[in-house]
Amino acid sequence: MKLLTFRKDGAESIGALSENGKYVYPLTAFGITDQSMNELIDNWTLEKKERIENRMSDGGVRPEYRVTELEILAPIPVPKQDMICLGINYMEHAAESARYKKEAFGGERPYAVYFSKRINEAVPDKGVIESHSDLTDSLDYEAELAFIVGKDAKDVAEEDVEEYIFGYTIINDVSAREVQTRHKQWYFGKSLDRFTPMGPWIVTADEISFPPRLAVRSRVNGELRQDGNTKQLIFGIPHIMQELTRGMTLKAGTIVATGTPAGAGMGFDPPKFLKPGDVVECEIESIGRLTNTVG
Image (cartoon, rainbow, N blue to C red; front, side, top):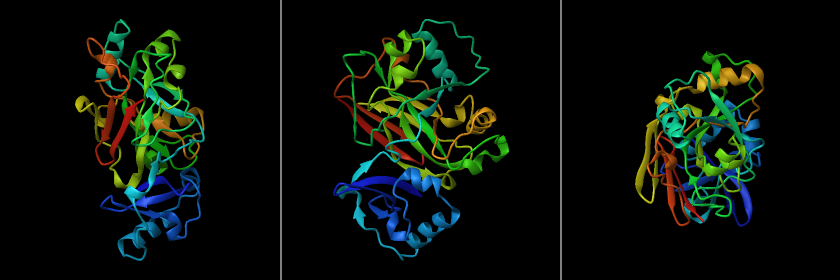
């Protein structure tokens, strides 16, 4: 099931996408009173999921809107907390990152690299990435699979991680490289306003085999830049959840971006950074495509 957030006549609502991708069922049509995606995740149950799916499939509820008549927002427009991100979690991206920073890379990554990213408001599909040209001339893109935690998680064993996943979405972890490098950490250079495109929707966890083995690609102005697969993750979702929840509680609705494959702009010689007017497409198998323009 694909769940999304939309705006109609100034009112924000949540809904389910029809199987053909052309229509949206407002969740209120299924007797669901949650007002936002964050609230839906907090109150998600198997009964709600089955009610939606059964009534969509048997025709008991008809779709109310065409997608084209709605403003589709990021699925979680305002996350409850900063997003947790994995840095250099594909080996070839780790190598290109080291080349860009002119550092030696020994081919080993014994520990996961975690950082957080502020999202005041996530950028939707078809939305604009702000170039912040007064701060950076090395604007970069990173296509990433993100998972959303479905219930509070503490001390989760690797074999139990799957039951804690609500669903998956696409993230473009936009980055100002020289800001990131100058400050010797990543938070500021990745957290500028309108630096987190997300969407177009959340695919519920039951739709994707666990752990995910999904193609991850990005294109800039139609040129293929990244072409990886989540099976190449150095630290997969079971490891990430097990490790993080040993020392902290991950609340329901937490978004975790799992890292990006090789092919980011900084990985080219010379680098291929973004400029105003560029169109960036991030595509993940079984989820969809997230398209944004640099403004």
